[in-house]
Structure formats: C-alpha cells, structure tokens
Image (cartoon, rainbow, N blue to C red):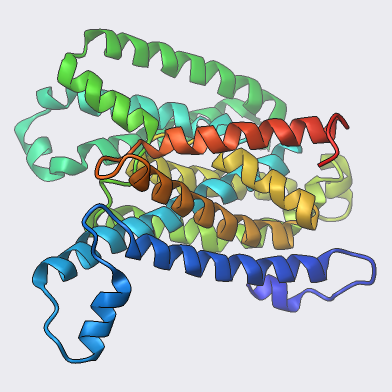
Length: 355
C-alpha cells in the first residue's frame, strides 16, 4: 500500500481509477469475509453470536467452536490462497509479457501435484518416524516441497552464464509439466479406491481442510510473498518494454527475474499445498484488472491480491451453499465461473463482442 501512497498522480493516467478500485475491492473483501464467517451448513450466524456476547449472554460452546475453529481458519485460508494465486498470475504475466501466463509455467502446479500424489499413494510406506513427525501434514508438506523443487530445477535449466531465458523457462516448464503428469498417471494407476478418492478431491481443490496449524505452517510463506510482490512493480513495468530496453534504463533484469520466480514459487506453492488445485484465479483476475485499471503493476499487484481473495471467498460460499450440507470442490466452482469469463476476455480482445 506504500506504493499507492508514494506514487504521484499524473494527468491522463489511470492512477485515480486504480486507487478507487483498490478501496472498492477492500470494502468488497471485508463484506465477503463477513459473509464467509456468517454462512455455513450448521446455521450459526455471526451477528447473533456477537449480539449475545455483547449483551453479556452465554454463547453456546458449539457456536464458538464453529466460528473460531472452522469458519475463521477457512476464511483466512481463502483470503491468503486467493491473493497468492492472483498475485502469482500477475507476476508471471508481467515477467513473461504474456497475458496467458500463470504460475503453472514455473512448474509449481505440476511439482506440487506430483508431491501430493506421492504422499497420498506412497505415504503409508514412509518410515514410522516420518509419519509420526508429519502426521496429517504429510500431503501439504509434500505438495509444497514438490512445487519448490520443480521450480528450482526449472530455474537451473533455464539459467546459463548468470542469465535466465524466459523462453527456455516456458518450454522447459511445459516439458516438466508433462513429465510430472506422466509420473502422476503411473501413481494413479497403482492407487487403490480410497487413494483415488483422496486424489480426486485434492486435485479439484477445497478449503474444507483449513485449520490453524495449516495457517501457521503455510500462512507466513504466503504472507511474505504477498508483501514482497509490490516491490517487483517497477521491475515488471520496466520489463514490459523488453529486456534490452529495461537493461538500458538501469533495471537489474536478472535480479528481477530471480526474485519474481522465487516469489511466485513461494506464494503458489504454499497456496496449492493447503488448498489443492484451484484454477483460473491466476489467469482471470489480472486480466479483469488490466481492463479496469491498466497494466501498471504498482496498482495491479495490490488490486490482484484484493480481487483474488474476494473471488475465492465467493467461490467457497457457492461451493458450501449450492448442495448444503455437502459442498462442491471449490476448483469446480472457479472453473465454471472462470472459464466463461476467460472466454469473454479473449473474444473481447479480438473485437468479437462489445460488452
């Protein structure tokens, strides 16, 4: 938010609109967060609990338990995951200068998926001390490590003589994703029925497993990445001119690439580890904001965090409400909403629609 305050308002630019959008998105996120805390299968209402508490009446322990141990961790996880995926998408699109780029291009999704599948299928064969140490955290930890290791491998492959080639990274990311997909297919083939169900639900994404221990483990990683992302704004704006032009104006191109890749790997790796596979947030959110406020990353990154968090909380509300008391995997909801929006964006860019 410091970047917003320190940036001068230039005549004819979109800075005023971007700031208004930021305040509007902040208010919308607050409203959505309150809705997330107020609605659920149990019927516990936040406003009634707060009224009883402020009036000095005893609040049932069950109501406090639902709000504090279930809904609040779920809401905070949704905010962090949505913001991380959206900011990761915005950074990747700025780094590759490609509006179709998303965090999956650096191997985070493929590596995290392979790590999670390994933990689900082969976790029972892990040494006893590993199972006792990790416990139910085995799948998130394996997913995060898989995403991080795949990103590091991709970075090493695409870096020569101290320079990272984005074209090589793009091609290597496709190859690495295919390789991870093949390994995942082999593991799925040997999995039993229970493991197949676990694989299906993890792959479709959900916030149902949110808890305070998971927030304590993955939350700081996502939060640090989100705090670091605005410092990339100047570098990403410079890269939009091309690497040669950015270098001539004094931009440390290689350092920007390095920090951007690490930021995306940390943010999306931790997000995928706690929520599973959730698509379209990283692609659609930056597109919508560019249409509304322009490509300036000083505002785009902040607004992407706000809008990504809001959209994921809305998707989670739909997932919890549409077939209550059961819930849909949140990845299905984001795909159903995100795919038509993305198609509309593509058609609008080609001038085939006017809306």
